[in-house]
Figure 1 (cartoon, rainbow, N blue to C red):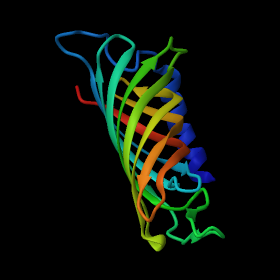
Figure 2 (cartoon, rainbow, N blue to C red):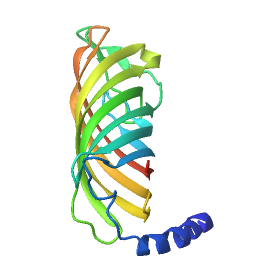
Figure 3 (cartoon, rainbow, N blue to C red):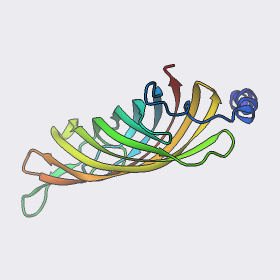
Figure 4 (cartoon, rainbow, N blue to C red):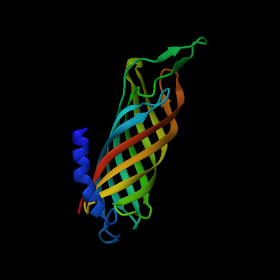
Length: 198
């Protein structure tokens, strides 16, 4: 608790005095570029992985308010078995929200809205391709999801920002063991930091 209060005392004054845009004004000859890293929690369902999520991304400015984003994330959840043959002898899975593991590559567009002081709200829409694994069941699949979410960037200095975002994912994946095509439905909440490369 003391550490959280101390961090707040350090960060709050910086936020109060930061009033620039999340990146320099758009210049077609020199667009802004940023690197970011974040940590959070992802929830899954049935055969969608969930657990601790680690993510990294790269942002490239294409207009004053829009950025193209490319990233990679790792989801690390429980490996506990939850697949079985039902009464009709069909193989099915019913994992909990924090089960499974996944590695995902994503491409997205981030759009910023008008800033409120140091705070810059944004929306994000993208597409992800993930390798999904439930180790104790020996089930592996490849999923494709449409991802959409929103967040806010709090600018600490001209080159550093703190980002918090929430996201929903909806898609489908192909799996072995006779599972075939299965829905992919999940959500995540992440917090992290972004650094300007300028």
